[in-house]
Length: 371
Image: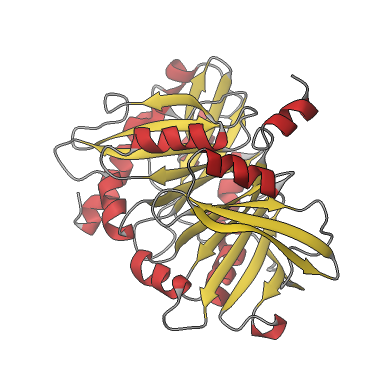
């Protein structure tokens, strides 16, 4: 089937990330945090000065990454209630499509619940079409069609550029995957949702034998579009001796939601050095992890001592290898965090690193008294 024919027959066959919208308690301060710690630039702004009376939003960019940081100006609307219940978190994982109306209709045919019917937003720079469906918890996906829009971001936003000088930019590139945490026994149902609604297929799955320590366990499956551009791993708790990281997330987030976003880089060592210089905190890794690393993953380009020094994890599959590291939670509640990832051919999700990673997470849980 040709690319054009496939796009007509399935409007969700060729998609990409558009933006991720965070609902937060104080957008000005949160935007400053992502600029100073992670090297984003502010590009645009929407708020009372642009005609919005109920909210403010800051558009941040870095290469192909686009964050919208939104806070309510009212004491009790949808945004304020979301923040009161969940804390700062990811509300909307927006997907770029060629035809938002067709994508929306395909999703609804697959059983998606409607949040926003296809709506045309218009200003002097053209027309942008947006439609929104619900997914796990209070998280949503917006379909964004930009073909007829030449503005800075979207109607209601004005250009408002600000940057913070850094000794070295982290050079974060684009989203690799976004991970959702769902409740007990819900993983398969949400995997099926992405199969029906988006036409995604399962890339890989892990059971509690793959992802467990002496104390905790979880199950996970990764759903992906045909081109592996947009990937959604879904995690659920599994039975263990103590409370798992997924259970802790569900408890503090008050339900299902986005656990972490994996962000790609082309040079993970330089990126982590820059982020650490900016004050970003990462999970630690036991020193013993690096003692047998060469034997486990084979020849790699990076020096083992560099990886040990920066606490970067490595895993290999039959296509190549990948390097990854995880931040500590980015807000007061132990909920949303980032993964920084560099892929050298590999499509894997770090199965060989699960044990070391989870031991590190358990150490943090123990400090919080939730293990």
